[in-house]
Length: 58
Image 1 (cartoon, rainbow, N blue to C red):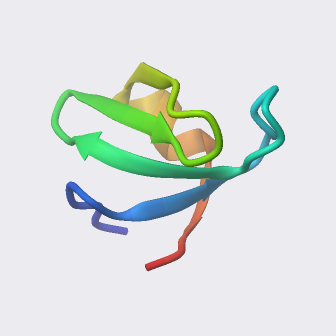
Image 2: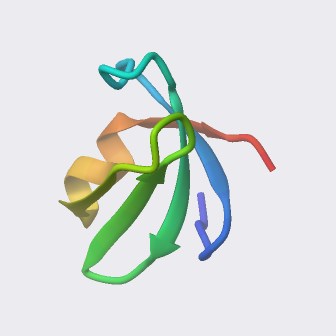
């Protein structure tokens, strides 16, 4: 599946704030994700990001 900046995605695990929804803010070798619940930003390797993402919401 192809992901673009601005896409909202659902992850397998729940973030500590209770949200499963993340916004993709950067795509490339690394994915940068912003939590839709609390605004926390994380950077993951592409392989790890593709493994935890279950589906695209928007």
